[in-house]
Length: 256
Image (cartoon, rainbow, N blue to C red; front, side, top):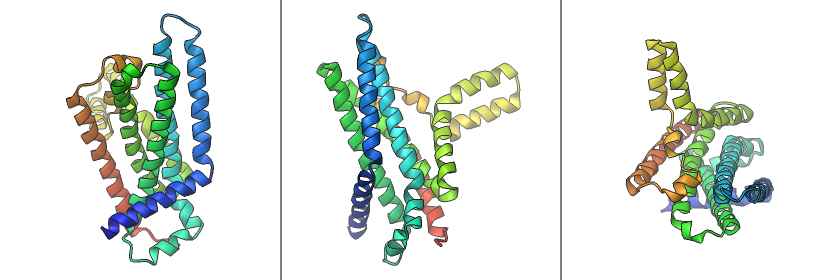
């Protein structure tokens, strides 16, 4: 219970700190601009208004979550090291993995607030409250993927410099969607070696393309409960893996 309280306290303090730094406010402002642009674009046509609004809106949600996860995850721990505030926490009897989970918790809280706020604004712009259930599944899938990206950014932020971790996180996100395209081009090469490499990549890289539900099609044709259950277990599995890597690295990292 004491460890849970310490993690919760660290998460809330981290959330308040990032809100105070105005970074989260900037992301929200840009997201509202994106929703406004999507709404204006949807009014230019009469046949596919809803499709354009939801497709662009849900894409904006995932991009916003990507920026939150990548930026905060890459800079969270290193920023505390540079400010010397981490030394105050390290002298206390708090396991280092609690600190990692605390930083991750603050990213989760910010991402959840952003997801709910963005989703409500998008539904308000579309006025399609009858699609609420399937819409919640779509935005929840983006939130699940942001958990994987956040944990990856935390791990990379402990291994390399924050700016390099940021670039690696964006590349990782793109790669999670691009494996089928890579495999397609590999098949054109007729090389068994590269085909094997492509198959290995499909196993060791999260398959975000299987969870690509951020479109109007999946709002009108929502995934089944079994698919949703698989998505939850799959994303949480990758999240726990990268959090374990981050905790392992942080436990052996010399803070100077």
